[in-house]
Length: 526
Image (tube, rainbow, N blue to C red; front, side, top):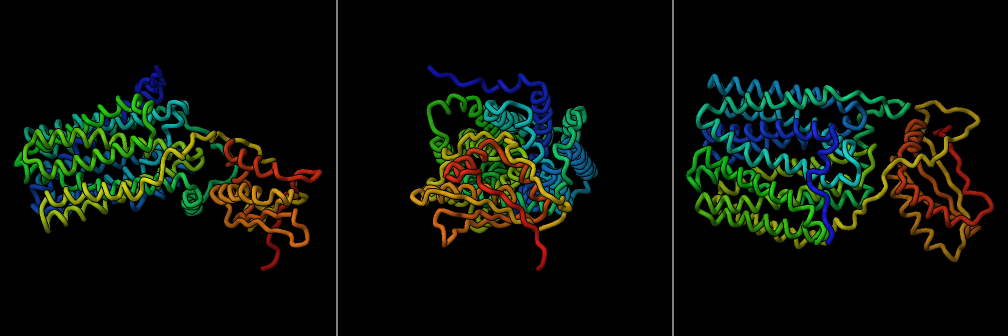
């Protein structure tokens, strides 16, 4: 019988183990803070919209800053970026704690400082996500991502209950101070990491160009579009649970902060149990089937929350929702990590986080408004039903089509040999490749070149065309345009082994005595 590698296998690696433990402590602080912030708002305002806006303040910064943060994660020292953002969040949590302890907190100051904390998290998250593949071997990446999710949800299981106890017996301000202290282990861990020398001798990519390249890569990568589409379709309905769970605890169940913490504890426990079961589940079901099971389970859990009137029945629904949430989000995360090479990973993870947290931030007030206009029960039933409908619509976009490609650098593009050396910012540059093919295999050649087109555009080319010679049906000219000579030289550093296979398949159609001729042209007159 086949057996899956143990979930804790990546913890053998010292760097990942230190990172995971520091993340666990930080996540405990975050979970306690979330309980304190939500509960503080229910005491400052009884409006469901204002309570839901706490989640918006946490998640909206990701919508604003994700792509910028992803570009930073790819072009600056990730170690320094994490040190700055972690310090930023420590100070914001400290300020919020002092305001709460002195009874000076208002709905506006709570939302503002929560937004500041969320901004630090938004700038921090792509770098943290992109680092994981650097800490473990590629064949342990899935377990490392699941283990990270398990750690987060272990904190979710115990952190909210602990936060509820702190709120009940010590006061809400202490939860914010404990969150501030929770950033210290990550600061100490990252501070000890050595600073890596730049991987490229080329000038640092401009932030605006890096952001454009991130969007261009996603646009021309079908695998990334599949993950982002599925994530959006899930989160837009799943956000109802996060927006309304504080009100379910206070209004529907009539419990205090301890009951709210217990519900979140059930959710976290379900996620941890799901994490330990995932390695075995992957042996018997495809990722798409697991995703379908997870989404149906989450939808039924939201419907159960809408119909339940007791704490323990609601807790069981949250237990199921937690396991489903872990299964769904780790499947999305693993798939998108498999789909991208290291040079673009920060920006790609930023786009994924943008979809997840941006949709959470926009969906939360909408579900809060629906609950205010109707009832909590109707809002949850509508969200569960909508999630089931969306599953039927998007299930044709399959994650199983995303292969585990070899995305290690191939370095197969030779250095261009030119009679005169262009200036770094000289451009645009037109690169041409001339092919002689067997006309009988024209359709096969065109199919292979469509893959080449996607490859060129996602790696940074501004424009791509394949031209035919009307006087010679065997002659084709591939052209693509790079913005500057430096941009083109970056293209020489980006191809992966998977990219090389695409080019080898296309070049195999060339039947000339010599390899396809490659030329470079620079703009002279405009």
